[in-house]
Image (cartoon, rainbow, N blue to C red; front, side, top):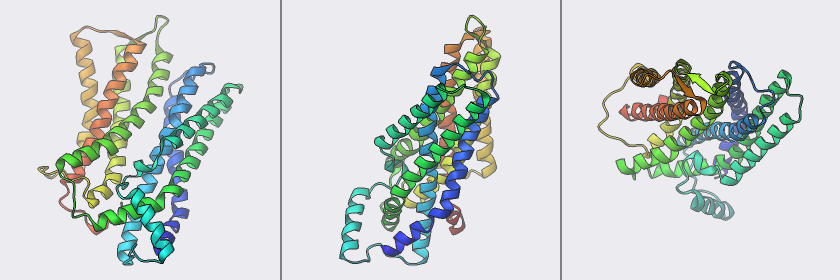
Length: 346
């Protein structure tokens, strides 16, 4: 047990930098979306409150889940190489391990270590950041400081979750690996995929893009609140491509560990190459944009109210998110085996 504790703690310095880079990357991508779609609403207070309330918990949770999964994967790999037995240890260690194991025996997904209390605290921090911005001069420099504050909040919350959850998650993963013969059947696998992949990642993607669509459509709407259908098609294609590719990459990496543990076990899936999976992901936004264009042409629609445009885009973003996650899972299950090399890169 002490060996495992030291093994997990030894990973913190490396993942500290990884967490910082992930926090920076995720917030900067969102920031670029907002800065490239003017106006940026110097005085539109409600929008900035909504942005901060959503972005801080969304980025904090996604970064934490990514890093936690990789820490647990590396802990499992090193435990196998060093023949670490987590049952070993003194009486005090054994009692601590038993209590930890009882509480986390089934908690082998990083999402299970993010409590509502932590999410509410992140939302409160986002509210505080928005309040500070609303009291500022709201210049472009203030806007950059707003995003810097969101990056710092994301980094701090992600690290807080990682420090508290890395060891119990690693213990749960190692225990699950030793009992991996009890693999899920297809019904259990589908339930696991929906609970820990489709729902959380789609919620993060859709809520984050929700703020973008509000800003974009309200910003380009005419004086009567109407948006051209061409703008809806273009924004759906660009955003759909971003969401589908992002979730395909994110879930494809994170779900590999759960595939090894036997929680993702779908049969009857033929071989899918990396290029074929990527082609499917890139085809998703094209299909969505074509569907919208076809509906507009069939019903001779030239404009939408901005509220309708937001609702339409949100629905198609949900489909893009589902497609990205589903293709990642199918590609993973199409692999007949996960080699040691693949596992090391998890």
